[in-house]
Length: 226
Image (cartoon, rainbow, N blue to C red; front, top):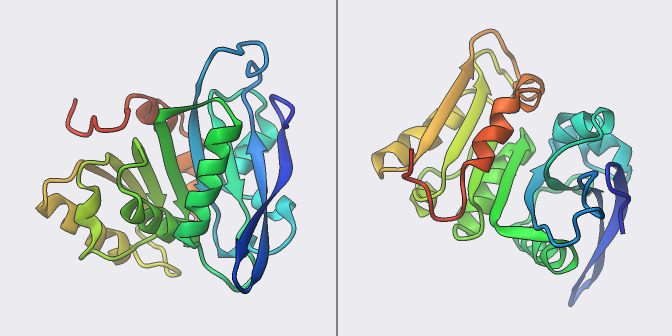
């Protein structure tokens, strides 16, 4: 069990016919988690970028939302931040299994489960939502991309996506394609472009309280409410 108000390291084991894979992750519980034993909390699944892959969870805490939580001890969400192994990508089946275990272990409000990630994790965010379109109340992919031919599977899921106009690592067109396809099928999507930003469009995004306020206005299945 994690100590409320602190981000702590845990290990999740997944068994396949070929063997067992151990995934390390950071877990944050709100400071009031123990003091309010009847309360179910909103939940964020955070997916990091390529530079944070490996076997050292401190890398995960160096960027994005986990970095914010490292320095800010009071945050009104349960946050799970897994670490992708070196040289690999985000696997939606593994993430879904981790999420199911977390839902059984912690007091998570299953109507308020949110998904976000940056760069490689931005791609993972699109992919995870498309693979499990009924699971998330809202998603926020940052400087990512995905399959525009499949994105209509999440037309009912509110999306707020972000990209830097000067990104040379993941060109902004990768997000534009997803946004255009989602709009064509009636999806609920907001698109924020930072005109002067390069690849790092996540630092200012995760530092913006409006992102978390936006998350909290959504519950599963409420995409077209104002």
